[in-house]
Structure formats: structure tokens, C-alpha cells
Image (tube, rainbow, N blue to C red; front, top):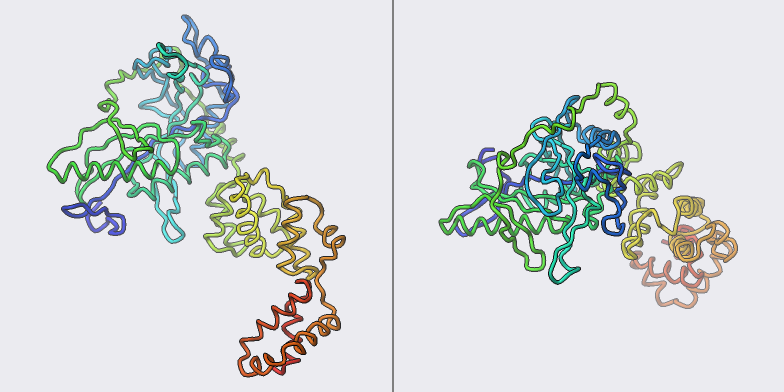
Length: 490
């Protein structure tokens, strides 16, 4: 990347000039499958310690791994979603290292021959900025167990429920240039995985976590020495870790020091990264093909069948929402950010004005769901109910203001919007005779303002407001406007 190619807005100001942040990411995504990668043990979250452990997971002598076909399918589906090369032949390797919660003393992973090769993700950093992030590879590997340090004063305990659970490690190229881009990239990856159904993306449960590689350089210079920040488990923390680590490196370099390649941990409470260990290189792990597993081979027909069954992915959905429904790119992005949100919107928009539907789904529904911390799948207002409210508005049976009142009733009490409007007398008054009577009363009570509005027609809004108030918000605002103009000679 040449000096001119670095975006000035992305550069970080140091004491001695500008610096560019370079980030590459390794996302560890837990595969959605009922059984583990090489055993039939359950992957369910939250079980009592060591209750989801087979003899294979516990590395008992003589126990052989058997590949779970569903995990292979999920990796291929993900590769297709990342527009990546699917390798019809891949190899499982042993990655040797000692860790207390890794019973075998090695992890079964993939090294030189991964199941998925190079791909690409388009990331919306803001409504006006898009970047392309290259995918280096995706490989399958087994997760380790979990060390528990707070159950006993003089011992650490091990829970092997997670041991052997399938992970997809998705390695990006070093194409990310800021904390904002890093956050947006992880958000987009999470969206894609959730759309395809290959990982639930639940970062609180550790089902999606990232190792963040950060280095800095002067614009146009070669890449600097990188440090890897391990196991960052929230999108917000990923952004903070990038900024904090880049600042640390810039200060060291500007003071004449050099960066040691190492693995670090991010401490969100203190807003700092701390050294964990010097960074291992691939040869330190003594990789070799696992002698208990044959190379993984499948044919193109296997891949094609999975491709044919993929859902519409976020980018395609956003393109369709802008072309077919005429939505702004920003609104289309918001609606397509989750598969369930997109499906809800389409159910509301079917046969109705799409822009009105988008406004109501984004502003009224999403706004309320966010305030109350409710997922769209648990929304008290169904797509059918919201659609009925929009139908009542379109037919001028209720005004926009009354529609919000109906939404509130449905949110709290449920029910059919048509029946609610009928039973509670919420219909809009379009009878010009009834509205005229209210207008006459307002005009008679405010003779002094009549002359003012005739001199300054922009004051008409005041009269409209008074008439709406007197009618309990039920008068049709358009009819009120038209009648007032003719009454006041405007």
C-alpha cells in the first residue's frame, strides 16, 4: 500500500507524525451442531460441569475421533457465504501444545490444507463508506475445555463440556485500518454467520470471539511487528483493544523502542493490554497430519447441493430492498442486519407502501424493542398486527397520531387493531359537517388570531393544532387543513 493510498482520515496522530493502524483478525466461531466435531457428545450450553463429555473428549486411551458430517457442511456453507474457495480435499493436523484443559495434549486443527481458502467480505463502515476485507482461510478445529479457578481455594478445576466442540477459525487478511473498521467487520461476519445458521454469534457465551492482530506503521512503509490480542469477546471491546494497543505501540516506537511480537490480553476495566506470552510461530506447535483421521474429501456435487440450499445473504437482501422497495441504503442495512428483522419487515411491507412500513419497523418497533431490551423474535406486536395498523392509516380510518396510540395498546394488551379501533371509538372523523362545527367554534373563540393568520399564513398550523385538540385527535388533518384555508380565505 503506497503512502498516497492511506486514507488521511484513518491516520493516527503521534508526537512525531502520522501513523497507520493495520489489523488482521482471527474469528473463532462455534459451529451450530448438536454433537461435537469428533464425538457424539452434546454441545448444549450451560450443562453441569463435565456432563457433556465422551471418552473421545476426555482423551481416554484407544479412543478414535470420527468426523461429524454436519460440522463439515456448516464450514462449507460458511465458506460459500464468504464467496471463498472451497477445497475438495483438506487435512486435519495435530497442533501440539500443553494446556491444562486440553486433555489430549494436542488440538486437532487444520494447518497447510484448510477446508476453505480465500474469500472476501464487503463491510459497511458507515452509510457512506464501504471496505473490502479479504479472507485468508477458514479451517475447522476443536475447542479446548475450561479451567475454573474460583471453586476451590487450593486447586483449579477443569470443565470439559466445551472440549471437542467444533470451531471455525476464520482468518482475515490485514486489510482493516481502524477500530471502526474492526468493529464493522466483526458485526458483518456475525450477521453472515447468523443468516446462514452456522453459528449463533452469541459473544456472551463465548460462541464468537476474536484474536485481534494489531501493528502500526508510517503510511506507505512495510508492515510493522504485530501483537495478537487473544479472545476478545465483544464488538465494543474489539474496537477499544485496537485503539489502546495501537497507542501503546506508537508510544514505544516514538520513544525509540521496538515492538516485541507477543500475545497480549485486553483488560476493559483498565483500558489496557497486558503481555501474556511471547508469540509462538507455526513450527513451535510441531504440526503434523493426524494419523487417526484420513484426509477429508468430498466432491463438487456435495458443495453444489449446499450452495443451492443457502438463504438469501445480507448483501443480496440489501440490494433487493433498495431496488424492489425503493428504500435508502441506510434503512435497507438496518432492516437486513438480522435475518429475523428482514423477514418481519417483508411480512409488514407485503402489499403495502414499503417506505411507510420501513419507517414504522425501524422507528416505532425497533426503537421500542431497543428501549425495553427485547429481541425481535419476542416482539409483542406481530408483523400481522403492525400491518393492520398501517392498513387502517392507509384507509384514513385512523390518523398517524392515533396509529401510535393503537400501537401502544397492541404492545401492552395485544388484540386485533381493527377491533380495537372499532371498540374504542378511535376512528378518524372525516365528516366535514362535524369538523366544520369544531372549526367554527375555534375561529369564533380566537377572533384576534384570525387577522394575524390572514397576514401571516404560516400561523395556520396553530389553528390546525387547536382543531385537532378539540376533536380529541380524531379529525382528519388533511380535511382540517382544507376547511380552515377556505374558512379563513387563505
